[in-house]
Length: 337
Image (tube, rainbow, N blue to C red; front, top):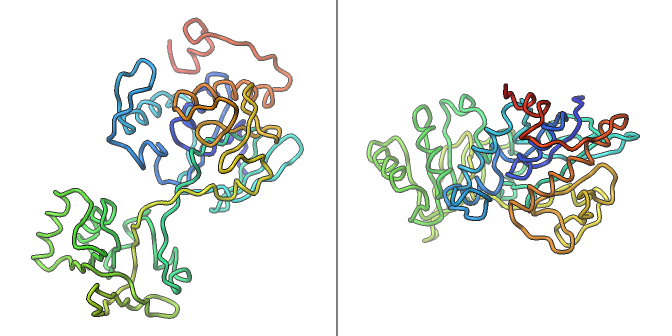
C-alpha cells in the first residue's frame, strides 16, 4: 500500500494545479486518472481549440495548457497512475484508503476529487457476447503494441483513434477497418495513407457495416459484420479493437456517501471540503453557491483546499502562508537557486 499526503482523483488542469499547490507546501501527492494521459477534458475534448480565459495567457489550446501545467509540477516528481479508476474508498481512523480497478491501494489523510464532469469511459460494444472477451480479446485502447503483433485484428470506428491504430498496427498485423458509414471523421492525411495500404492489400476497409456477431467460446475465432444493404460477411479475427468514443460517468464516486447535487458534489466554499472530513472536491465536479465552471475557478478551489490538506497531513505543525516570490523554502522546493 502506497502512502502519501493527498490522493488526487483526476489529471485535468485542476488536478495538475493541485499537485503544485500541495507541493509548494511540502506535501506529497499521487494522481489517479481513468484516461491514458494527463489533461482531462482539455486533451480529450478540445486539445486544439483555443482557450481565452486563463489569466495572463491571452490564448492557448487545451494541449498547450496541459503541457505548461505538467512542466510546472516537474520539481515534485509526482507519481501518476493512469488508465486506473478508483473503485473503493474506506476510512481508516484519520486516513482514507483507496483501491483502484488495478488492485492498487493508497493511504492518505486527504483526497481531492478533481474529476471534471466524471471519468471518461469507452463506449463499449453492445453485442451480447462482447463482455466475456473484454480485456482478453476485445480492447478499447492499446496499452502495449507487442500484444497485437501477428494477429488478425478487426478495428471498429471512424475517428482518429481507429485510423491511427489501423495504420500503426498494419505494420505487423492483418487489419480490417469497420465503420458504420462510408465517410470517416479522422484526419484526411491518415485516411489517405490507409487508402494506399488498402490498394496494396494490407488493410481491408468494410463500410458501411456494423458488428453482427462474435464467434468463439474461450477465445474469438471470427466475427460477422452486417452491411447496410443486409448482406453479411465473416471475418477471421483474433482481436477486436473498438473506438466508439468516450462517455462521461460519475462512476463509483456517487456511492461514497457524499452529498450530491445532481451530478456534482456539494462542498463548502471556505476550503472546498465535502461532508466527509478529508475529502475535497474542486473543478467542474463541485457545487456551491455562485460556482462558475471555469478552469481559473478550479485553480482557486484547490489553492484553498491545499491549506486544509496541510493541516490534516501535518496536525502538529502550524500552517504559515508564504509568497512564492519571497519564500526561500518554496523556491527550494521548486528547484530554484
